[in-house]
Image 1 (cartoon, one colour):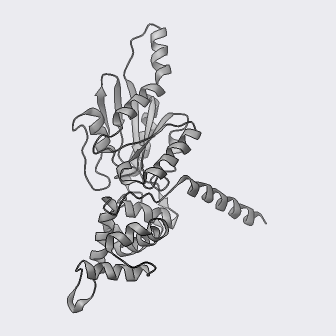
Image 2 (image 1 turned 45 degrees about the vertical axis):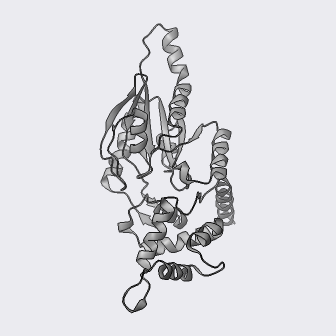
Image 3 (image 1 turned 90 degrees about the horizontal axis):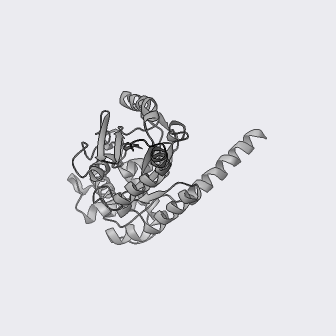
Length: 298
């Protein structure tokens, strides 16, 4: 599933980040804890080159705690602090703010040693659409400082927000990359709600979600919908449709309605705490890319 997704406002956002990055001391890179690989814009490495960085793994309340710990350890090995958060409840947001101060201690120490007034730390928050930036900003600031919504791309413009007397935040809209090349990456983004359902075939996405759950969390799927094990995804959708009364004229299953139920219950964590990616996936991906390069050179 190759998705072309680069509307004009995302090009403007990329330019906005580049133009204002020099004003910022540290960047918060916000990801979905359930899909830390797929919810990470690969362009950020180049955009944030050399900038101090803290990773915030949002929606951690919906993610598998064991896999979240693996991600925290993975980033620690890279010298980057990763903090699981819940932007809606504010869980660990104070820890995130404390880590920002630690990252910028050298800046404040330098100001003190030179006898200068300590200016507020300036941070930038970056991430893909619908990953929870606006909710996080509001929790950090303790007020409705940013517009929030449940649709991708709600944050439209540029704004500086005073978090407290010590921290100022430069907000940016969510930004995806020009083309999502890998099928599974696009599928996981769609499952999480980062890409608008309106531009996708929700039945296909739900079908792929079932396959992912069978591979990683079969008990969550079978227990939630009271299904027998080892049945095909299309049969699972049909069974769910009949159990939930998703029927059309002629007793036919309304597969679109079933798909929306599946996606909604995954996104809300009703099926359980589920993470679809682990650091091991990155290692496997690197091995595959190396194998491809080797085969091309032969």
